[in-house]
Length: 113
Image 1 (cartoon, rainbow, N blue to C red):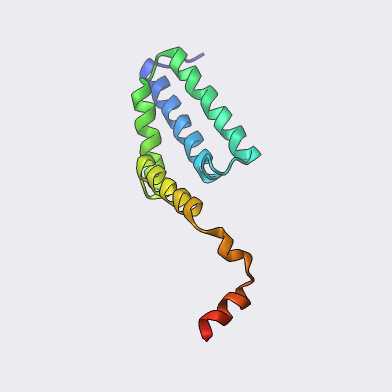
Image 2 (cartoon, one colour):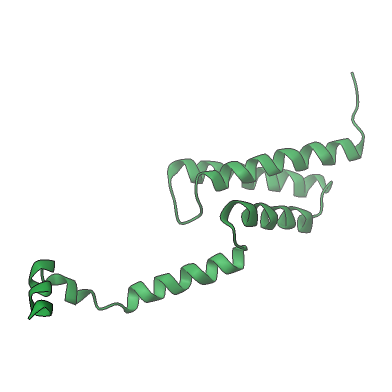
């Protein structure tokens, strides 16, 4: 039986961690809220907890890995994405949806006159 060194274990854990993060992001983000996303998120959370208990890898290394993969997958940092999505949400909330109660063909008639 071959025993692994601490560095080998760290490398293996980080490799698996990266795979899990990529798989999670491949299914979407927290807004997806699908059963598959939640299942992958729960699995990743358990993996992070196991790493934390083992104390083999610092949590800031895991966070840096998450941030790097997020940037690669979504093309923007987690903070940038959060801000952009908040602005979209605010715009949607501020829009006067009442104006859409009238069918489009009626709204367009008034524009043509």
